[in-house]
Amino acid sequence: MKTVSTSKSHGGIQGVYSHASEACACDMTFAVFVPPQAKDGPVPVLWYLSGLTCTHANVMDKGEYRRLAAELGLMIVCPDTSPRGEGIPDEKDNWQFGSGAGFYVDATQAPFAKNYRMYSYVIEELPALIAANFPADMSRQSITGHSMGGHGALTIALKNPERFKSCSAFAPIAQPSTAGWSKPALEKYLGTDEAAWRAYDTTLLIEDGKRFPEFLADQGTSDGFLQEGLRPWLLEDACKKAGIGLTLRMQDGYDHSYNFISTFMDDHLRWHAARLG
Amino acid sequence: MKTVSTSKSHGGIQGVYSHASEACACDMTFAVFVPPQAKDGPVPVLWYLSGLTCTHANVMDKGEYRRLAAELGLMIVCPDTSPRGEGIPDEKDNWQFGSGAGFYVDATQAPFAKNYRMYSYVIEELPALIAANFPADMSRQSITGHSMGGHGALTIALKNPERFKSCSAFAPIAQPSTAGWSKPALEKYLGTDEAAWRAYDTTLLIEDGKRFPEFLADQGTSDGFLQEGLRPWLLEDACKKAGIGLTLRMQDGYDHSYNFISTFMDDHLRWHAARLG
Image (cartoon, rainbow over all chains, first blue to last red; front, side):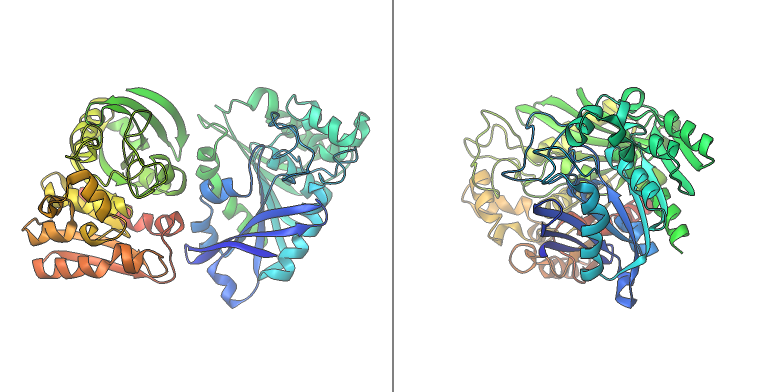
């Protein structure tokens, strides 16, 4: 692991690190905020998964999580959204596939299966690296994310309920297997047999019996992706049928940007802190 | 005035606007955050002047001012740091002069005098535009800034004490006329007669009798520009001799980045809000 940069912020340290990833077969970069409480012992970890086109840096720059994370004593870990670099298969002009669009799946189709293994990266390799190198209490983890990263957080929590104390999402993609901006990606990463997509679709995972105690989700009413891409009512239906507690808050006049995310970041941090104990 | 973008944030509106500037003889872009209290009538205005290489966008993205500005009812106005665009004289490879480095002066030397008039822009033209187009209470204005923009805030407050209720700065350039990264710019903008530079140097303005009731300044001890470029002890000496109240806080371990600025942004907003009434 290589330290790219560290900078004191709100009494803690905002760092950027890189490492040679086995899961993705390339160098990967990620951001970690270590709160001041880490001086006194391991602190709980909140994972933040970013949306399409983002790197680790977008939420680090615009997410406004450090002030309250420093107060609550939360470590914030922000992975990249895909493998990157020369030699990584990509579609340069397509922001919904390839670089910046890993969708938190383990690809099975050539030529993507070698690198696009963001599920394994986020759930296995990076947690091991964090546990080994940071003052993290890995028995206390929670997860959140935005848009594609909201989809990532919900699906990962549903498949690993024993790992995470809580899960929330900002404007998550509720049903990627039927949305225009995600369906072509699932087909290219996972093949044409739609049965394989179910493991990466929140509503279908719930239909297939996966459970998580409760979710918090915020969604802006002026979000340009609301009707076609995000469709929170599908999440609402799935949770209702399954008896999963969902706090879905429609936020009047908010869009899909970090102005929306940063506005409600405090609420999400407090939600997770309360459940991390 | 043209609206480039607006986005709801923390209950207010973060907007970006552009207009044909007379002072700078080019199109200029600026950012304004209008807090929710503006629905009920004009709100006080805090000016934020940015540092070298920045545009209006850096503090808008990374300054973390909206949450508390929305609570305190402050409008935040963030101008660009120089004229920009084709046909504007510039030194492309020099980050300490030209684009992004207007130093808040009115240039008198060819070919810069036509466009590099950031003092007039910030103190006359943009305030008139704000007064005409936003719910601003122009009888209640304060000013702050970072680095080159801290220099801008201090010099502008000293020359216009009747205009501003309060002034603060993050890591300001205390004496630009003798610092390596600013002296060459002053020479090119204002000519070789150093007497002309005194009007744009905080310590020399104070020496020449300009006064402001009190300043708040924060300075990181791990700031790479501290010893050569910023030199807060010169500000301290000048204020002491003149009997100007200076609250200078040396912040242990902080650097020159927005991680430093955003950490202490709340303190500055509260300082100004208390004095804006």
